[in-house]
Image (cartoon, rainbow, N blue to C red; front, side, top):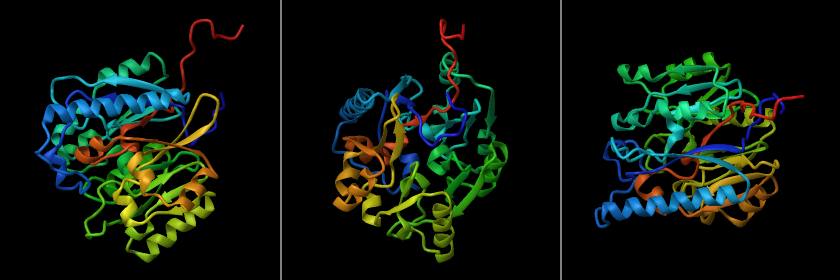
Length: 319
């Protein structure tokens, strides 16, 4: 296997939710969440599990390897289905664990998950960033960070959940340069996670440029996209509100790529945007309306990419 950094992987970690539901603790900074007490909480939990299982099956059918972790019943973790916020896995064998703003979300960090993955993948070092929670500063994994893994650029829109000082620390530890900017929604509220408004593929970037008010920051981003060979596929604020920025490109075991998005996001795209995306990659869209409505996150948030080196299995050693 090549040791060159790659932008996409065919190994994903996903957490099957045990107690999915609306999290009032995160709602103040996540404008994408919807509070609706007309549905029974147990019914919401069951619908989320069905959506999750359908999603995993769709990925596996296309040759994408999904490592499903079962959420624990206790303590209750309503957002456990979004593991990309607390951990990232890197091609040099390192992992990073992150500080999260919502106290209840900190319960999602589980060393037993890391131990299970260590049976199949090489883990060389771990960077613990969660101690920053004591100082009330946060950096929420690949919610906060859009990583160009080939060119070692960490894109981040600053917000209460994405701290510039911690971004500097990540870049120093992991050998990245940062590209920071500010982004707001149509109501002028800071966009809480970068992956709501931007998705970076091997040869393209889907981004809501209309959410970036500063002209110089726009210009700097466009320069970096051009320099790194990314075609810009712009989306509108309305499309962003339908999660059209919350996408992830992955590979299957034979090297075919897919841009993973929700059904809601796909339906929000225009025909010409879909055609442009399909000129670079295949599209897989999945129905996750319940998870989007109550969790305020979409398809990308549910997938933690595993770039760790795989351990040799017995019988695979060279003769």
